Length: 313
Ligand code: GLN
Image (tube, rainbow, N blue to C red; front, side, top):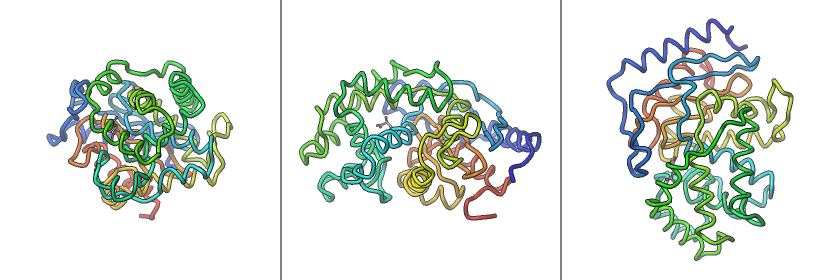
């Protein structure tokens, strides 16, 4: 059973207060120059339980760059488009390497390890793009986020997208390398344009927690009753989030938090407590693996205090 709302709100507020006071805030990402403008003092936390009760604290309504959290939603869309054929283009194993690692590409003949490392996410974006113009593919991704996030005001931060377009040399290298193995069907610049823009979608913790609800409830938003994916697919996306959602920090995240989660270098994390809640946290300072430092700590405390780890107490 989910805690009653006042109790849940109390836990959320306590954790937010503890996080605000902590001096260790991690390092804001600077390799995408526009992200370096984020304020490391920002902190937001939103939990939406099975009944739709919202417990929120901090900067929960401030949009931030969701970056790699978008990969959960592009994966969902690509699976909807091509089903299990997607797994010919991308694997399902944890990488044990950084999100933007290049070394594995050569060893594995261009097929990326999983849909959440950059190479895998670029391959997934390429699948969504095939048969469309980049603008249409991007529109489809954005509309999907507006639909699951239940907010048509969700938009792309063009400054962040432009900043990554200008400086994304490593992603360009990854994409060109995959193209040489025939893993990408579309022109590299088209695929990367869509990828950079979906990473630059800006959402608040509240919008993100809303968007994750179908993953917490067997593929269906329990409020609207609208089914987004089949229960089996929701379960599998959660499994990938647990094993691969934090790159080479995935083991540590599972060990400490015990929930499926997906991080982004904007400092957000979407975490799923299956059957119980969808959770979004935002703190822009990152740990050395590129995952939100305080975001992970906040989720660890939350899962512990509410007994929400999927592995039990
Ligand atoms: N857009 C970022 C990149 O490709 C996403 C990385 C991330 O959030 N981990 O580098």
